[in-house]
Length: 119
Image (cartoon, rainbow, N blue to C red; front, side, top):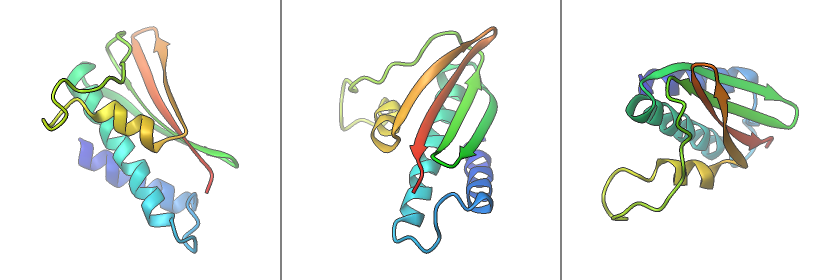
């Protein structure tokens, strides 16, 4: 599921021309987007009862990626109990890589989104 979400997101972001291919940071920016997509989908699968929908939206000033799931519980970015142990770092990564992130309650779960400013 995560691999398919990454592949789909790469195709869409590339097709939209969101990251200027001539820009020196284009590939790094796309990789940041893909890592955030991976973390959001993983969190939905592990903590949210499964990912329901992956959404990508672009306008002249931002790219928004988001994942809906079935859990009404809002995620909280917090320091992991054991920093060197795998797991528990996902939302910290999301917070670090995107310009803004948050959650929107839904009738049957939530939508967790992240925004990247245009490059």
